[in-house]
Amino acid sequence: MKQSRFLLFLLVFSASGPLFAEANHFQSGLEQNQLIELYTSEGCSSCPPAEAWLNRLREDPALWHDRIPAAFHVGYWDKLGWKDRFSSPTYSARQRAYARHWRARTVYTPEFFVNGREWRRWYRTDVPDNSRIKVGNLKVTLQNKNLTARFQPEGSLPDKLTLHVALLGMNRTTQIRAGERNGEKTTHHFVVLGHKSVASKERRWQTRLPQPQPDEAGQQALAVWITRSDDPRPIQSTGGRIRP
Image (cartoon, rainbow, N blue to C red; front, side, top):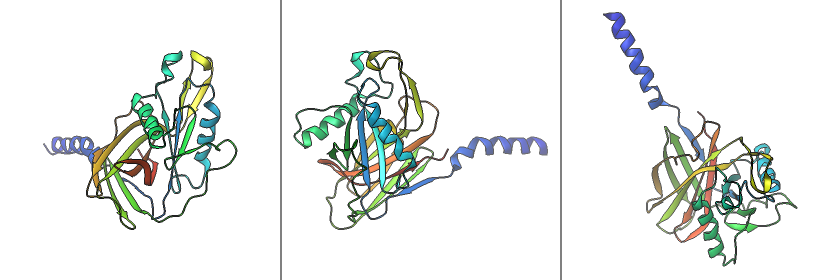
């Protein structure tokens, strides 16, 4: 009887183990970090150099402290011969929202944005220096796919802010078998697997981690940033690798 109870205890404990998984904590600090967005596609023959540039940030000591990278794969290349498994029409819409904000006539790949401003000199120089402006501290906790965030601003800001959460895939490899890059093999880091936005008037947020598309195993990371409701430019950002 005692042995049966002990076995039952072990079963319950093992089943409930994930409920007590260690939390992941991220915070930005007071100075404004740089959200580095790349809009790209596996079907774009001119994108590999830009992705290689972004991939080099893995070795950057400022990664996750001053620089938060995210590669959004757009969908408008998919009809030209190769369907990018990481692409989404919502990522294309996000890029077009930037174009409307800056009154740009078109969108293209590869296209970089640093804190919401187009950056064309990526192939000539390193990332622009951080502004060092004190904007406030963004704190994020992730536990069992439940995410909570709180922003403590420096100075005044609008009451309503929007939290953006991007789930990132690391070290994802694709063998391309059609289109302009037929026969090439490419490796992605910081590729967006899922993205969601949540508005709040209290500068506190509770949400679930975005569902990854495609849903596959592998190392993941997180990029989180906040914006005004009517302005896509990030106010503050943070992120880091997710411990299993």
